[in-house]
Image 1: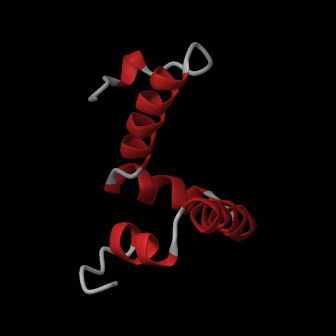
Image 2: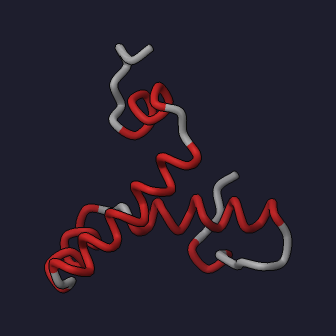
Length: 77
């Protein structure tokens, strides 16, 4: 399932889109990059990004999945 950064490609087929998106999110979530990007974004951009991502989480995850996978709350039922 691992894909290198130079293999990221969207729009060819669903399987590659999923693999590319997973890799993209992993790259985006690296501590140094996240801190650099957050420092350069405006407060409005940060809020818009969080709102969009939160909306996607609510749309695609159950409450239990949200707690287990996003918050990493292993005690969630």
